[in-house]
Length: 312
Image 1 (cartoon, rainbow, N blue to C red):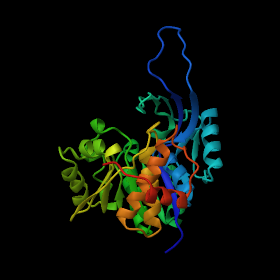
Image 2 (cartoon, rainbow, N blue to C red; image 1 turned 60 degrees about the vertical axis):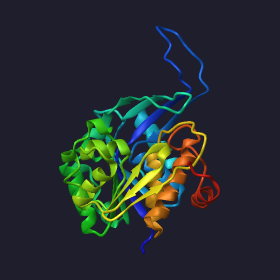
Image 3 (tube, helix red, strand yellow; image 1 turned 90 degrees about the horizontal axis):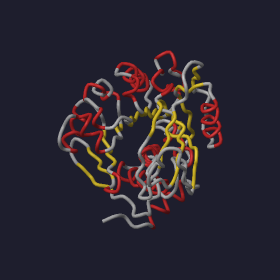
């Protein structure tokens, strides 16, 4: 088995997180908060952060601007040990950014700027780097249309690269035709429960997941927040409980699960073992503010998984 070299491709965002926010002051009013942080985030960049913590070699590709926001995003990724040379920079488009006023209970409404993410196309794809990788993780394919991600994933498959896909849009904005062309080239599909229902256009999680499997996906790992994860194959379903922790902020938890799951798969673990590692990574991130929270590595995440209680 070759060493795990992952290319994360897709959505890159600079998050500005403010906590706690119970309400927005009226007019010119002001209020004091406990913390304001800026972090790299998004279904490509956020996943890259936790993959790097867990010991994978990571290269990341996507579109950002040449603005100071893009400069800071690269600095944060570089600091985490992620290779950013595959990022493309736009002179005429801003870097994607999100402002998240985090409520005391961990909920996170968003104010989002799409920015350069929606400009990424076939001319930007690092074809050789993908062919050299052991794993391609594509985050937010629905921003690229259907043809571009399908061609990227097909290229990975042609070079025996393991593939995974995570979605970005909420389920209410999803339709099956947005992702159907991708599914024959996806080894691991990693949506949340809302996305399964929205993109499958079904009323039941298992039915929706199996619709993806019937179209070619190898395994669907569905995240369900505090209810844990659901692994769905053509023959079986298996529930992975979430860990019982005090949640500060859920930003990046889905990306952390993806990273832990993919790291486990890269290490030759079973899907269940990989999902447990994903749940542990998500729980560690949830205990602080932002996608990059937590100074942990693979042994510490494994120890957390062995010693912490799960939710009942």
